[in-house]
Length: 251
Image (cartoon, rainbow, N blue to C red; front, side, top):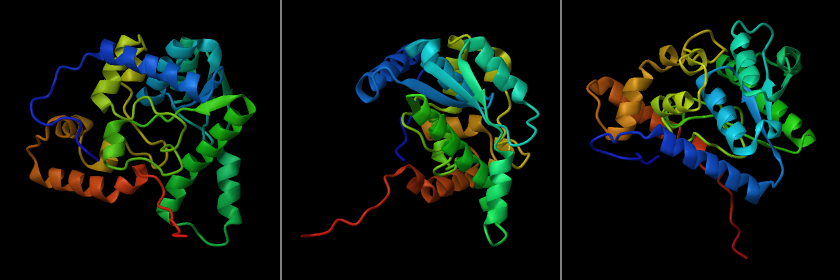
């Protein structure tokens, strides 16, 4: 993935970029689903909150559908409920616990730890597409540039979608846009956690988003060991953002 800018970090105009993104979403729906609804998986974190808010401003609250997908008990589901209430959007709650357990039991061998962690996001994405196809929708991808840079997403899980408003915005930039959108601070500043293994994003990654964001935008980083780790993750996970390779026959 190419760095968006290298050198002195530019001042980020959150209002300008927010307005550009709102216009982009409107254009996407005009060209790829005129009159369709935006379907957004709502976790209660900054990314899904900002994407839902951008879609609401772009399309109106009557054309945005939130989908809350706990896997059994979700201790912070109140944040997701706060978001849909704040925006006034229609929403559904789909508990995926039975689906995850059913599929895990149906597979005739014990899944390894990585498979178990990635299964819920993939079932959530299947859920979003089921809701979308039954409600004249287009599924929003809620990943940001920082996560994509190091592959912190599940292929065909949260990395999927029909359109991606924040794919070229770092964590810091997403948060600034959230403030411009008037989202509650508790949503914008919520500590990122995957909801799967009990750790925060930064604990899993081994470095902070602030460090990663600065490196992405300027190429500057003081800890060379962490630089090597980021570069390695970026290289290893580039395939997640590429179109699936296909054989081209020569007739």
